[in-house]
Length: 257
Image (cartoon, rainbow, N blue to C red; front, side, top):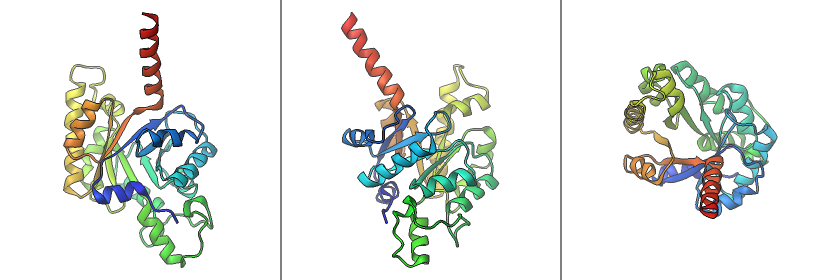
């Protein structure tokens, strides 16, 4: 069975840089993205339109070329977590985790016994169709590869940040800047960036305190360096749509000027 490069990189303390996939639908693009130097991709099913079949194709391709695929499902519930893990996605990026109970449900759904109650499946892309390993050894190996990131996107979530960060089976912490800014009442105000940076530091501090990984969304090299230097190991740089749009806009401006 394939191991999870993201988890191995975290253990080594390696900085890993990825990007959101919102628009791309051809899994062959993973070969191009790996060539650019990216360490992982994160498919957004919450705010874009890929089908589960498309995500499955990306997951298998990612495993084949050792470019990890992370997925944000529409909802972090048992149904979505089960399906994504079984199609070969080791890395689940869980939105709107506001309570300890929700975090515990995520852990239970994502790990087999004795660490959870993940639904049992036979040979699948999630175990590379490898059924030669003794069953309990196989379940432990798979449990050890799963990587769960929780997103704090509300004031309520920050009331429980330490309890969630301390939970076994929660591997990484991050925040959703726009939804959080909206919930805090600072979206579009002069204070938005200041307030969000304060919340980002709370996430970094909680991750450090409880030995968890910190992930952060960045839109520039300057932001990436700032949060790298703060100890963030997983940086998600922009998205396919934003990079394509900025690249074409810059080229058109130069050509037409």
